[in-house]
Length: 288
Ligand code: PAF
Image 1 (tube, rainbow, N blue to C red):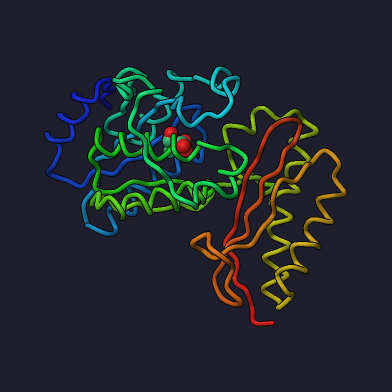
Image 2 (cartoon, helix red, strand yellow):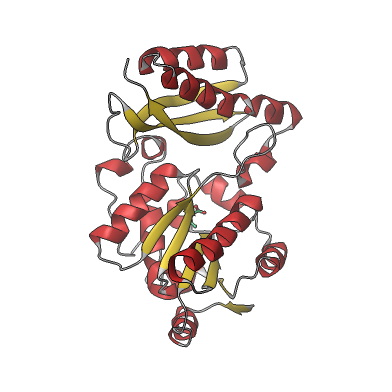
């Protein structure tokens, strides 16, 4: 596994590895099983599609422009040596670890940015204005530095995944952007680098978040109206005072308004002991 820290070096490595498809997995480090699953999915999925084992490029870059709180950026866990060992253990071929100067040569304040449009202002974008502008800007830069054929993102950050797919299409990137199902702990909690900031009590209570999503999923599958299902789940969450819910909504699978029946998504954001957790699940709305 080669570690590359310049954009030029990364582009040149990709040019030298055009004999097989290249798949990218972008991260901000502090890796956990969910990230490793992205790598495994990339290997399996590209092999199934093309019959070839892809080169997997991972990146580790804590992107300053997507943080809306400077404390969050300063406190973001940085575990480079452990991260590299994990990536090597799952067979990553190249890891891109650029500096802020490499990614933002004109400085973060002067960079050209990607406007996410109206989908960037709702749900996570409402609570964190500018967040998705930062995400799309850096992903666009990562696309140009790593030049993959495929890029894999976790479904846990469903709004991020949707926006990146939209950007890849709008900008004719030629990159196939694919989502990977969320990896969960045994009690259902979605894996996230933020979970390590939960104390024991908060960690126990956090399991109510996926339970609420499953309740909505099961109720609408039985034909209970979406609004009633959401109310029931919100009531259950209200019984756990440590959880302060920000949103619990059902949308279409494109994050636009929910269909009256068929495939949709239930999404949640909640704060627990000052830690913001998000999650979502695919649901099937049965005609009432
Ligand atoms: O999901 C993440 O870890 C980040 O938002 C990403 C996609 C690596 C961009 O910085």
